[in-house]
Length: 347
Image 1 (tube, helix red, strand yellow):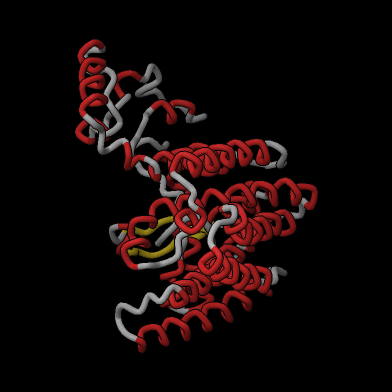
Image 2 (cartoon, rainbow, N blue to C red; image 1 turned 90 degrees about the vertical axis):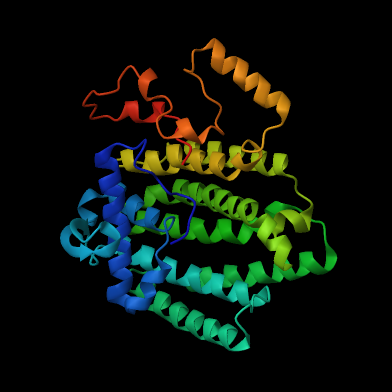
């Protein structure tokens, strides 16, 4: 599974994590029911947000069912979003279409480490998933050709950037932004709230930008090692500028979501608010994990002066429990979950 939204159990409220897992497992099982067991490999942490957005606008649009034991849940049964839910089917369609695009992008990058035959197999799998995504999308009134077209446009922009160099990194993230905007906006159609479409499209553009940039940040070293395309390298965009773009997009995402009318917005705000900010921090944390002697000395002094109540973010020994003894709400049964954001979890 891939994606930037990966909540951990250390800082999240159990009820919110259970709701998130219901959508995650629901997406996985919808892919299985709609495209076969192998399609479960296309399960994406980020596209499940489409299912979450649909339910948040119309709670009755995401019926639940009890799923049988699964190895990834420790062979436990669980309540999951039913595959009949329109949001889950839209999320599955988008997952297949975008996963097909990712496979095609890998082939275009010349990633044939396992030989030409493996590249041919990936192209065939991409074609099957693209067709499956189109079929599932048609079932909920969504034309995945929009996503396929943006993937083709993305590859064209990458080829041009490779041959000519320079340009703006936002030109390269634009196709991803448009694809996510289309998917987010369609959740308003499924929920019967067309007035939400414009704001959701704007939120989708910002989320698509963040996802594309963070993927580029995390893959930059690996892309350089194998000679693959990376939008930051191709446009000469430094880490500081990439971080600024991500922070600006995260603020825009938050503002756009406040324009949306939800029946229940708590999980949306957690995933597209708290967890997006956490994802940005996680992607740019590498530089903090290699501090120089000056920063180490300063951190040591500050840790001593605060009797250990403050710890530098690169201190993994304390990362799992940092902040718990300083949370005035720790131990309370807080149904609104405001206490969940006090823990500066580094995972």
